[in-house]
Length: 420
Image (cartoon, rainbow, N blue to C red; front, side):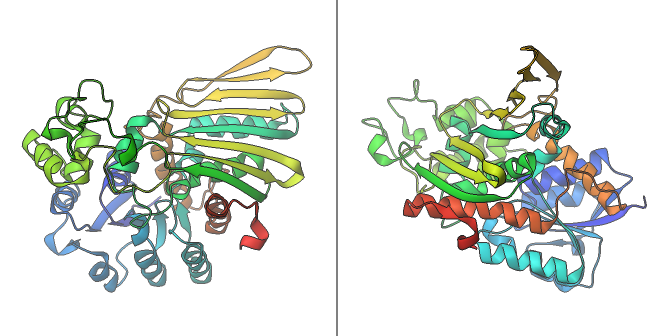
């Protein structure tokens, strides 16, 4: 394969991750030739790492996409509500896309991106990174082999993790749906996608309950100040103490997000704690997304799924897949998939090192980040795989999340055909 040129729009956590993998692991296959990023520290990191000239580093996507087509692929990893504009402009220019999920925050924008890509004849590879992990590929292969017979039920838990919830979905960029998108879309549209992929049938009905019940002012402990750094009497016992999380523990992922710096100093972190949501008491932020939600789904051939997304976990995904010939039990933060056979009454263990690249929030989605870049390389060379889906299929599966939110808000069972 010849080296493919890439532009990157949005160089925060996801854009940096994908471009780092392209450079560090697939340097002969990809060349990043231009970036658009409003934060100077991130823009300068990309400039230095990829040897870009100043005139190929933009503060916004508009002047970059106003130029004649520069590359084969556009990586779009902006905030959720900023996907639509650059995606549509890049498609019009003839770029293939690597598009961070969700596609867009509304069904209308999702379908318009889909139709534009189909009409232009470009592909949009949406970052459903779970499809590209060893863990979920193994589950898909076991189901497709017929070993457990016909799938009848799936229980799937998305353990967001209490600290991840506090960082990203309370204090962070995704805490308020008016500024990003609803929680069931932004966090778990790839769970809905993976369920549809595993089952291989269309979702027809959805019913959901969920709420923001804990991370609210009513639950703030007595005497808690507006900001942790002001001196909280509960700092030693609070798992969400921002001073401990951002200053004392020095976790790079947390600190970089809070400061928007690549290598933040303690001084920069402390400044962010005084001036941004990341320093707020976790019970006193402007968050409005749910902290726990359940979704019941009906798929074709009477396959039923119950899905739980909850902040109140250590983090990680757990599944039970029930078939007519056997049952699968699996946890993504482990390294085993167990398959119980109804005839032999024996359990077969499938070794699957899902933790090699880390399922936790500071890892690479169980290897999925690396896997999707490998798949992108092959796709550009005309080679696909069972993990790759069309933008139409991705859109269809996004609608499950949109319908789930509609159900949560109205209390109704939503038929997908009526919802569309």
